[in-house]
Every structure is written in structure tokens, then in C-alpha cells.
Amino acid sequence: MKPSEQQPAINQELAAGLSQYKQGTCVSIDWVAGTALVNIPGGTVNMPMTGVPIPRQLCWVGFLGNQPICLGVVPRPPLATVTGTPGSGGLVEVLSDNGKTYMVAFDGGMTVTPTDRVLIDWTSGGTILCGPSADPISGIDLDVPVGTPDIGSGSGSRAVTFNPTDSGTQNGTSAGAGSYWTAQVYCGNTTLGGYFYGGQIASTIPDSARIDSVELFLSAARSSGSAPTIGLHSLGGKSGNLNVDSAVTTSGGTGWKSLPTSFGDALKTGSRLGIGTKHGGYHIFAAANSNNSGALRITYTV
Image: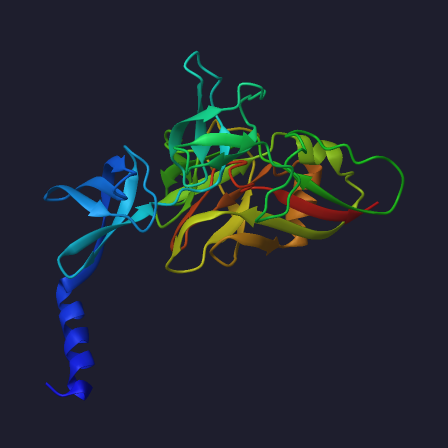
């Protein structure tokens, strides 16, 4: 075979499936030999490592021809929200920003309480390192407690971030009905989701204030299809059927979404109490306070 023909032939072989990757579960590691024993579909195989897996957790396995190589652990989000209380075994339950629940270890000198945002080292198998001061993605101060913010007094312009107290999704088309079957906020053809803020917005912003801007931060676990629509609802908490109105189209994905100032006008008077999804595409947004999803930043002048 001519040299000019060799690489196209190699590319065809790779495309035919001689090079691929799949997930497996690490069984054990031989640090002396530098190999990992991994359970993959078809059996348990000992293989060299280029990345470090974690025993009993998922890892990526690549195949170069017939040779499997462990590429390392399947990544997990570094930020999570504490959802349980520390147990006698030295573990605590957290809700990761991928929407999954894990039991992780923590420093015995730390005070860990539910709703705390924490930074996790997964290379150790799952250990809480600290409670970060701010979210590295949204830049929101994580030390600001959920509840009515302290905005001070006097006239002028203010930008206040309201953190949701809860969130959830119901099935429905024109309105939601039945149980809230997840804390994540879905936006699809047959789902309506909502973030709930209690009465904190109406008790903070004066009715006479001029609303200058309204922004909603969303952390997307999935975002596909047509653009999501975001509107208003009148529920103070996760009880009752969601009925979302005044919906507008916004962009999918993670980030701050600009909403009409009329949303702020409705929220400041208490005629509406929260933000909800009203169909469009297939989008899954994180639960309240998971990666700061649902944070509502309203700028107004008094």
C-alpha cells in the first residue's frame, strides 16, 4: 500500500469501530502495575490507566484497536447542595448539580447543614472541601440566605437578587395538575415547572418603585428543540396547580435570561408570586438553589 493510501485506510478502520469508548465501573486499582480492573459490558477486564478511576464508580474506557484503556472517572459537578444531616457514619447526603443524590464524606471540623452549597472533591471518592463564598458560574454570592433580602433604606436604584424557596414540575398542557414529581423545572410540550419565592418579592419592593430590569438565572441540565417560554404564576409555594401566564420566549441553556419589566410590576404588588415555564422544546433546569438556578435579579428605582 502506498504511503498516501495508508492514512485513509486507517481512518476507514477506525470508523468501522476498531476505536471506540464506553462506560464501565471500576472494581479495583493496582497502583504498582498502574492498571485498573473495570467491569464493562461483556466482562471484567484488567487494563492500563491514563486517568485515575474511583473504585465502585463509573469510568470511561477507550479502545485502541482491541486494547482497552481506562481514561479516568466519569466527571461529576464540583458543586452540590446539602440535603441531609450528617450521619453517624461520617457521610452526608447532597444533591449534585447534575440532579443526582450522593452520599459524601466531610471534614469532621465542618458544620454542614441542609441547603448549604458545598464544593466536592470527587477524586477522593467524594469529600466536601469547603462551602464556597460565590458560585463560579453565575457569580452569585452564596452567603446570601434564602428569604427577604435586607436592602437598606433611602431613595435610589437597587439591584436585589431573590433566591427561590422551592421548585417543581407538574404534568399538564394549559395548566399543571397532580403531584410535583421532581424538584427540577421542566419545560416541554406536556410539562409546566415553577420556581417559588413565597411573598418575599412583594414585601421587599415598594409598589411605587419603577422596575428597571428583571433577570432570571437558569442552570440547564438539558436544552434542546424550540426555545423555552417563561411566564408568571401565583403560587407562593409548591402546593396547588401551576397556571403560568404572560409567557415570553427566551433562550435555552445556562445563563441570565432577560424578562419584561412588566414581570417585576406584577411581582412587586403580589398579583403574581413566582416564575414558571410554559412549554417549548425539551429543557430541564436545575432545582431551586442548585447552581443558583431560579435566582431572580430585579433592578428598580425608588
